[in-house]
Length: 345
Image (cartoon, rainbow, N blue to C red; front, side, top):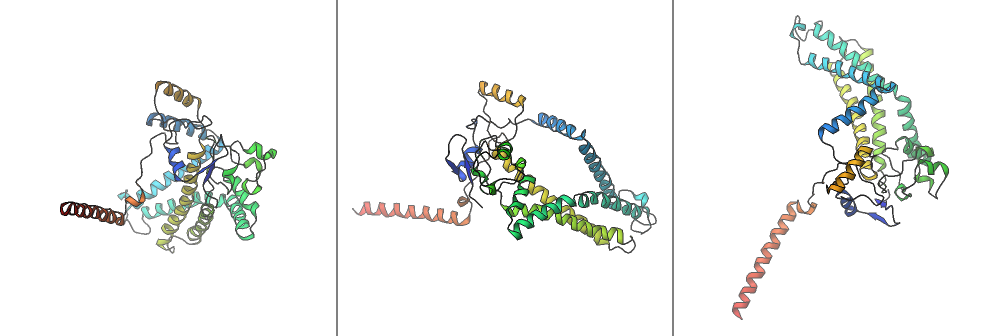
């Protein structure tokens, strides 16, 4: 992978290394192109912004279906949790663990419903998941660069190709479609309209380590495989013959791998946004202008707060403390020796 170099918006100089990242994190002035991250919002403002964004999503057809799906998962999952905790003693007839007790019957019903809900994502997304796997294997096995470029277009929110950090800071999808610039095709997403947007800060994020791309894609594929195994147990065996460990094990594994892939993509996306910037609403722009006139300082980073100072690694270890102690002893010995020599003279 290429080194972490990021081009300035006003010059052709390339900045890299930890010091430039630290300077950007503690920046209080606008970037060279005038961009400034949104100011930090208090919990009330953040809540209102979140609710408005959620409502805009819910009223869309896909958003409505996703919301209904999520509510079903939460409701049936909550009911299953309560049943497993014996929260309803009235269902324990003749005993809680009796195979024919209402509790065990409803555990089976809940488990089947949740399995069907998980199949919606595990099997319903197969065309997209295996498409991504096909492109990944194209790149990994056949060394076909086009596979990686297509994945960069699909994951344009967080995946950055090697060499993309050296593209002009004004280079975006329009420039890629029109063939503006002499950029190498290996640094560009495909199709051109899926090229990542020009960074708002005037600084491009460094290339993404490709093992993270492998991790995300394989996590989603393994989620489908594990869901298939779980469905085999749930649909191929009745509740009398099914091993008691099978349901819990494969539900847990399928959820863990899916969550791990999603978290990785989220973290990388947040990292890219922290460098390239996020859109600033007109309301926040007005607030930033007023605060600047009033002399209010805002840290120009994605969190809008002063970053925590980190101690250097060499100041944390036992060996450093030993070296520090040894140096202090040596200073004392030198001072004593100097004093003795002065007395002798």
